[in-house]
Amino acid sequence: MIDLHLHSTASDGSDTPSQLINQAIVLKLKAIAITDHDTIAGVEQFLSYGESKEIIVIPGIEISIRHEPKRELIDVHIIGLNIDHASTKLINTINDQIKGRLEQKKAICKRLREEFGFNISFEEVEAVASGKIVGRPHIVEIMKKKIPNNVNRKSRNELFKMISIGGAAYVDREIELNLEESIELIISAGGIPILAHPGIYNVSDRKKFIEMCKNSGIKGIEVEYTYSKNRPFVGTDKSNWAQNYFPDYFRKIVKKYRLIKSGGSDYHGGKKKIVMGEANVPDNYLKSFI
Image (cartoon, rainbow, N blue to C red; front, side, top):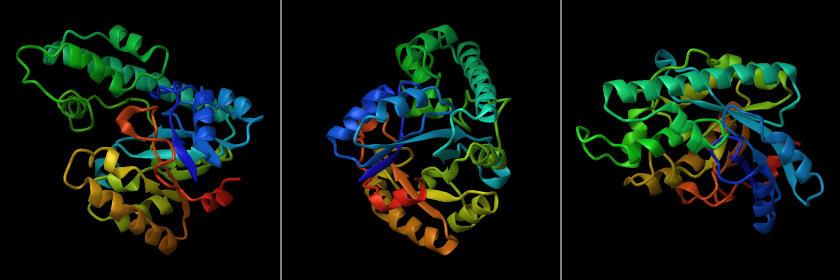
């Protein structure tokens, strides 16, 4: 088996890039890819450590693209696999993305503090991130500790929704690539653009949505994915249905639109009770990436 969707401490995972490799070897995976959120900071360690190991390591990234409701592009992510992490264009663009991401998180903290009564500062969130790319899970961690009296007790998932697209305290990023720009950036760095976890998006017509992404330059989609353990299905009565339905559905879509098959666990290091490799991505998918 292989796993082409893994996160490290370079973004919001709890395992270092080297630890990802060690664990994959223990699990006897044939190949893995590092796909941290909007950063390639962990790729160098990942590749250099993996050179001497009996495993194929693939450099990647997961890009959060611009929110475009008219095209039903809401919280959509694009994975780039087998990228050249030394690409000047990639490095400069990702640095701009990181700046936009930080400004967004600062603005969300400000809204939570001024409009919703949370005694929360960006500095606290940054400390929780411990040098990683600051993300929504880091904000939620502080929110849980500081829920004000005038706010009804909310679950972690409800707090996450509060600062996500459509949530009461959400703030759009000012600097963010759109679908086409993200795809072009990945291709310019020699990578293959893959639509991440296509089953989680709330779209009116999945086939038309995939067709739009293909026409925009997407080369493949994640067929296998841990739907039962991820939003929006985890903890709902649709979790088993999603896990059984979507992989088969997207295998047909891939065939129809002649797309590359990919897949992965979206492992973050023990979070969400996800085990590396449990998406059961077959070895033969590798031929498209090496």
